[in-house]
Image (cartoon, rainbow, N blue to C red; front, top):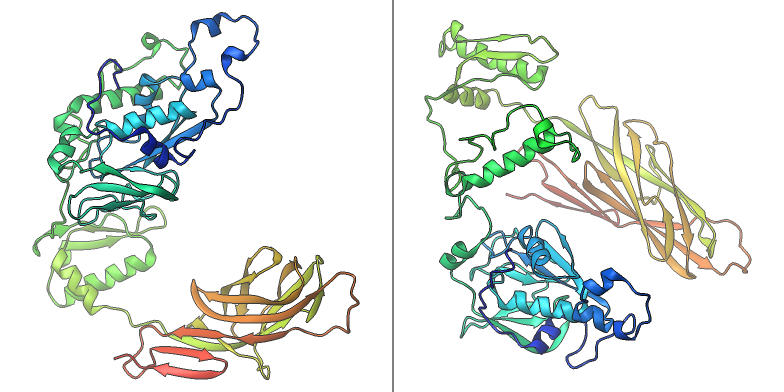
Length: 500
């Protein structure tokens, strides 16, 4: 971040190759401008303009362009937070933006090219852990591939298996290039850990708590000032009452060096449940405790359940971990009984409609059988008299108001209707697809066939559109051995699998 320090140059990518990677102009193409060169502009005298020398791009009147970097969490040399501070300190006329995994900087076009070349050539860039990505930037937090290279869904890069060099086969936005651009070999893992600017208490990374505790002190000081100062920059530091020490000495906020591995407690370990989630949990705990007492596995005074002061009961004292696990196994609940109920879609929509006119599509689920209509099975848990399902509509060349709605389906009665409003945008035969979901699971699909005619054509007598059911899938959970595992209904033909 110190502009007086010259960053180490690790590679030298040709300027025309940088132009290829950025994809703002073709190599050799003239720069496009948004205003004449500053020297040709007739502007009034201004002391500020005289003091501030324009950048080359501003002086030439270049348009605004950008370059964007993605830095891997696995020890990339730079981090998104560091890059904008570096750019602000080293360059003029820039507009950086920082997000969790990527950093963009905007400037005049030839200035952007100069910044891009310097940042690709120097030590802030690694060919495997730093990405030049104008769009679809994701991958900074995804695990590396077998060669230690950051994930890129657009596959802008490739690895030369013979030399180990990383090369770009697509430009920054994933477009084709007239030639590949070789960036060179990646840094070694040891070199990356040496150069990285990130704190990562894992895989041999820097542990802030011991390796650089001053950072934690400064962060605590900043937080203290912002909190006690009430975010009031006009209040002097000496006017804020309270502790003036920097940070909180010997503050332990972080896990041990290298992170924490999952450790299984010994079977003889004891634990304490401070608060149960609800009355049902407390009831299960009481039943388990009583069972242990009857088995004489624990003494009556070892554990007790008391009601809390609020609406949640509290389990106090101690319970051996191994015993509780055994209770859970012995008290495992039986699968919830579910009743499958058939419903028949009743859909009202014209068979012929006019272009650019709004039409209602009315949907109900009928309890009584409708001849020629594919039924749908809905699951009703024991004691539930009404369920809620989701109905979505999808139709090409239609404007649709609210593409998804909830429908309340009674156990024995017909459902109330729901209405979608559709406006056709082109003439011809059209298909409207309705999909039904229960608890997020796909239940079935109905297709509605209609014809869109020109607005000036005369309507025929009203006729309902034809509908057809395509596929309904129903899965059974917690079944016995002789229960069907999967049922697929296709145009009223039923196929059943028993998966063993």
